[in-house]
Image (cartoon, rainbow, N blue to C red):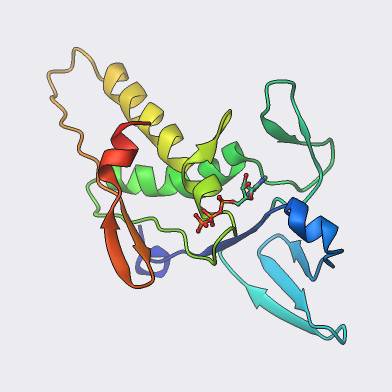
Amino acid sequence: MTEAEAVVVGVRVRPFAEREIQNHATLCVSMSQKSTCIYDSSGKEQMFTFDESFWSHDGYDDDGTGYLRPKRGSQYADQKYVFDTFGKRVLDNAWNGYHCCLFAYGQTGSGKSYSMVGYGNNKGIVPISCEEIFRRIAKDDGNGNSYEVMVSAIEIYNEAVQDQSPRLARL
Ligand SMILES: Nc1ncnc2c1ncn2[C@@H]1O[C@H](COP(=O)(O)OP(=O)(O)OP(=O)(O)O)[C@@H](O)[C@H]1O
């Protein structure tokens, strides 16, 4: 990990919620690789560059199990893609002994829980990481190493810190 990579930032756009569709919401974001473009009401563009721009607004279908996968040729970022490009990076660094933190920031209903924990078959970064941690431990079986896994998770809401670890342990 180089100093330049010490902090990485990604943005993700979720599909319109039912209420937004009913209110005839207008899409004002577009993404291309690492760039995110936001249009104001006059159509003026503002371009931002992040380490990753995850387009999850459209271009997906259900694979029959409830999992949302990209349609052929679409740029839809599914849960696996988000884990592979962001979650795995944090996990790999933690595995190499670095103290790491991954947090989701956004207004209510913006998709933080979806990305971090997920819903149904669309597992988020936390459960995929847990599976990966125990897969790596199992793979190392017989090499004489011992592992201790501890989990903690906090939620900061209205500037109050809440320990969500017991909730996480029930997943
Ligand atoms: N990438 C996505 N693809 C499909 N649906 C999504 C995606 N992100 C979020 N959603 C949907 O949008 C809704 C709101 O998402 P979510 O519950 O993750 O928001 P949140 O930011 O955690 O909200 P809160 O702060 O109120 O807990 C949910 O119904 C969720 O299923």
